[in-house]
Image (cartoon, rainbow, N blue to C red):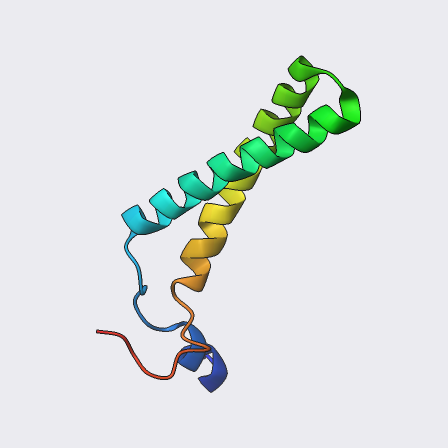
Amino acid sequence: MRSTLYTALVSRSAFQAHSRTLVKTISYRLLMIVVTISVAFVVTGSVTDSINIGIATNLLKTGTYYGYERLWAHISWGFEGERS
């Protein structure tokens, strides 16, 4: 049996489409790749190492962020009322 709190927070449809979440995820990750590569370059001084670090960390983070966004798309906490 689900608790009332769980039902109030989670049992509803998502506020945004999967395609919107995917576009937000990709655009944010592209920005973060640039930031990560820049910081890695300052630390390592190597373009190759910086690019490898930037790509590896951001591939993992992209999947994590997408899943996190999809989870929050189903949580109604923090909204005054239902969106149509």
